[in-house]
Image (cartoon, rainbow, N blue to C red; front, side, top):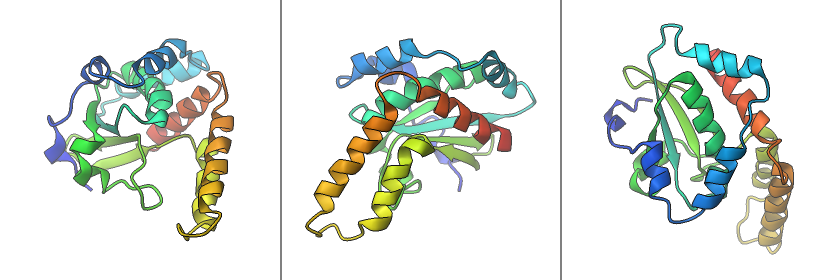
Length: 187
């Protein structure tokens, strides 16, 4: 997969945040609450890009999405530490790209996409940490009929479990740091 044609079509994270009309307060709050799980993690990201890599990052997202509000503040801290300025692709304006990065066959955001200097996709992350995504994976596996009588109730239970796994505090943020580190270590 190649995204070279998307270079320059997105907006900066600063533009995205400044233009938010929904969830901005929560987004900024999660951003302010971020703390590195360890000095070792922070150091890893600080030196990662300096190792002769030419990497770009696109983030498919939208302001209305709760997973964007919780997860992207962490991703932005990581990218800043790496020295990478991501291009934000607002999902509704980039549906053709979104449709190349479906989750369980559906449009789930955020999707963080890393490319080389030629636009070749090197890796991706999202829409949420694996531990938090696990209930949705199980739901999709066991609830294939959208018309089933218990589909909506099961979906509600799944969403509640996802919220429970996120928790009230910032503990979930360490999961994102770990997964992003693992992704970058493989690139």
